[in-house]
Length: 277
Image (cartoon, rainbow, N blue to C red; front, side, top):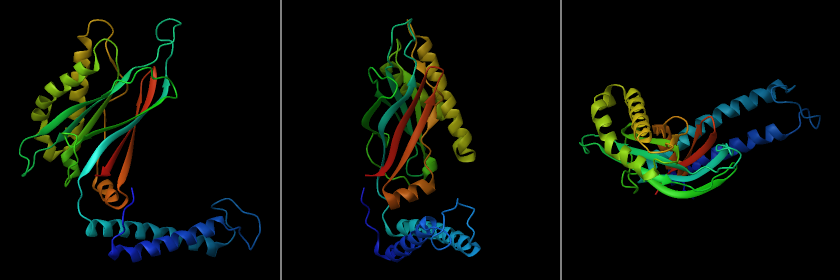
């Protein structure tokens, strides 16, 4: 995504590029006027090492300054959080005797917009992504499913603490992805309401309680299935937005989240992106 640098920020960007190029040259140039290249940290020229240290500090400062300049000179655009791919790092091919069996994974995502002065009622929705058929080790499946806002459309995020996006990784068996999504959609509002007071006083504890509540709901509906229940792969995870991430999205247009889910029989990486719409 090409982002136009605001005019007031262009001088900072030019200086950052100049300093970065100088550091790259120092890192790639042999030490001692054409002598052998030595390992980092073993440079025999103290002045050179000091210059590199100073450049790294200047680059960090310029990078932060440039990001802040973008924030000050670009609008707070609507954002979307989107599922982009699922990669199967590993899965057990011999779950039923000697006959190879591929997984049929899916994701359940619960997005919550916490109440505030302009939004006095909690707004939330459960999304189902997949199920994906015949997934084996090394397979990647791509997609484009928006899980923010709660209707799947772009929306501005003024307070990153006011947005909670929880992700459960599942393997379908007898319960069924639709049933699990419906159970989360139906039962999670009570979990949100019960713990809402903690959202202002201890937001991280509030998030943990929502994750625990979602895990309990999924476990309950899976146990009720006739036959083999759908298995949850790993713990409930969250796409944790922060002020720093939102500021970087102002500058670069996109930020990637890789969520890793692991169980005794499978390992998956689900990739999401928060991006300017």
